[in-house]
Amino acid sequence: MSYARGEKERRIMEKSGILKNKLFLYLTEFFAGMSVMAVELGASRLLAPYFSSSQIVWTIIIGTIMIAMALGNIYGGKSADRSPDPDKLYRRILIAAIWIALIPVVGKYIILGISALLIFTVSSNFLIIAAFVACMVIFVFPLFLLGTVTPSLVKYSVDSLDDSGKTVGTLGAFNTIGSIIGTFVPTFVTIPAVGTSITFLIFAGILIALAAVYFLSSHRGQKKVAVSAVIFVLCCGLGYSDSFAFWQNDLSYEGESIYNYLQVSEDDRRVILSTNVLFGVQSLYMKDGGLTGMYYDYAMAAPLMIPDKKAEDMNVLILGMGTGTYATQCKKYFGDMSIEGVEIDDKITALSRQYFSLPDDVKVTTYDGRAYLQAIDEKYDVIMVDAYQDITIPFQMSSVEFFTMVKEHLNENGVMVVNMNMRGNNEGNINQYLSDTIASVFDHIVTVDVDGSTNRELYASSNADMVKTLENNANETGHSDLRDMMLHVADTSSVYEAGDYIMTDDKAPVELLGMQVIDQLIQGEAAYYKDIFEKDGINGLLESL
Image: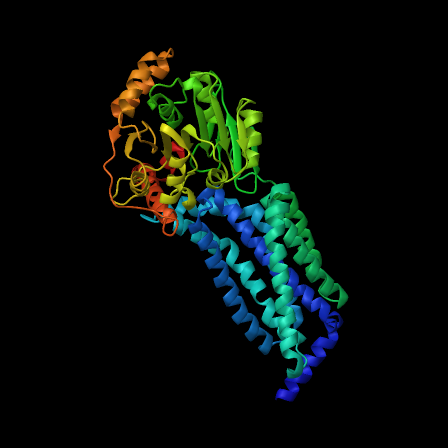
């Protein structure tokens, strides 16, 4: 029986002449490994505008892909032993390539469809479940197919036990090298240059070309190759768009950077930057020059909390500059104060000059906020920490060590103002952790809830009388709208009673804490639409939307 099977395998390999060249087998392993990593990185960019790019979402992506690869390895090994026909392997590669090419065409619709379904059926952990289901539906099948490549190639490439170790090692090396390239090329080349959609198409095209070389060289499977090529061309025509908010046709700008999905929209009153298509405003510019009606107005209290110094004489540092809303507003209301910002995403900085009228004399450094503090000796009167974006909270900017560094860069009686963008109510929520952590570093803390939003502003200083100072300075400002706003901040502020929820560089579970709060916010929003659905059905729901 073993002789007959061995003879059958030999005849199959003879029919597939190109497989006699082990280099082609190694290249198959190389491109398969490269495509797996490219799809993984593409998955993160496809999901981020809807579910964020937090560590939790990355964990879901990596976990589901590992599940797919493990199942593919098992199936590929059994399939190669049972029926060692290389046509089946390269057919699977073709199917995986077509599936990957279809992701830019239908992936965004699948994500929104899953989200719409789950928001009415899931009562907790919505983002986790929605991201996991989206990953399972969109990415598991093609990566399961690519997971069959390695065990199949081992079957075709090992001639004898004498050189099996060397052959398997070489296959592993080619897979690893391909994976390395598949990690760097999307991140630093294709996604910034041409976007996520075309990145999927590029790597799908590589896999189709690989399978085409096999089938055409063996003089069979031409129809499969032709059909795959036609589908790929159609996907290139339908899926090239990098628009994630495909239902909006009036955006001033939509694109991607290494770090973010970026969307600029505007109306008669303001220009808005968003890095999430479902919720959140990250920056805005008021065309009429007035107050924003958002947390930026509250944060402008910080310069007025400093005694015996005029606001226009102060040095201000903004960590998480965005498009410079805070800097622009301070310039308008406080005069020619010295302001500089740190923003890790240089594309956002470019947008700030193009769409948001950030003054040219405001210096912006492209760097991580904490790393910037560590590299300079300058001291400031106000340091604004505005680096927390939807549920993406950088742990290195939420620890005792970070806030200690901020305090060291403040002048005497200087003020740190922190925008905490998700106001939680449960015991041990993310804002409680942040506030307790800051309270372990600073002597005096007051907080203010921003009306009409989930934001809370926190002010920290060594000055025990910063609220009283704010009241005095507010009454002296020449802008009536600013005066009223600052007096409102003073009236609604409260001294924070510190607890024991402390975050350090070693332990800062910001992703889980943020997910808990955003889950509560989503439940609150969904409850409104659930009531409409229960009363008026799907027609009533569609009318409300």
